[in-house]
Length: 74
Picture (cartoon, rainbow, N blue to C red):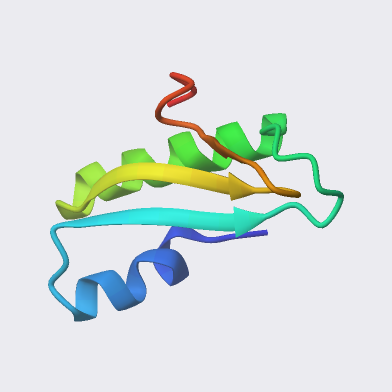
C-alpha cells in the first residue's frame, strides 16, 4: 500500500514542480496492472492538490518499459 503523503514527501521538501514515478515488475512484464493505473491516477490527483505535476509513471520490465502517460492510462 502506497500513501500519497509518503510519495510526495521528498518532492515537497525539495520544492519540486513535477515528478516522474518509476518502478519495476520483477516478473519482467512491464504491463500496467489495474492497481498500477489506480495508484497513478490517485497520485496525479494528489499532485494537483499540492501543485506538483505527475509527468509520467514508468514501469520497467525485462529489456522493455511501459510509459503510462504515453499509453494514455492517466
